[in-house]
Image 1 (cartoon, rainbow, N blue to C red):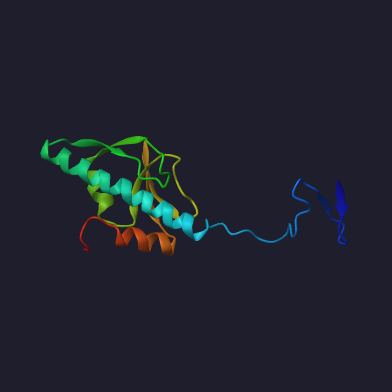
Image 2: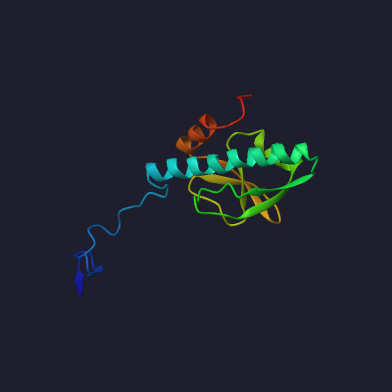
Length: 140
């Protein structure tokens, strides 16, 4: 069923009725709990990767297979990264290694793209605050 507005626009009825305001802008940033959850998930993966880096250094490896540090709690992808590159990323508490395509564009910017992974940095204020607070390395 279709209904016409006074401005000449047609509204299409759905099972939930007519939309209230189709012109209202939607927020691009996920709701606050979602931003917080994404930031916590990423810091959890980063903490696991810190252990992987330490073990790799003990065995004098040049590379390690790290977990993707994206915000998806169910992500099981791994990315092979030279330890030197991992350490360069970890110099910045708001930067993370993610598999290509695993970017949360609403809260992070791409810093650098590599063949198999991407380095991202949190730009959302809430997410950046959380990841700084939960950084396993001491403040520099």
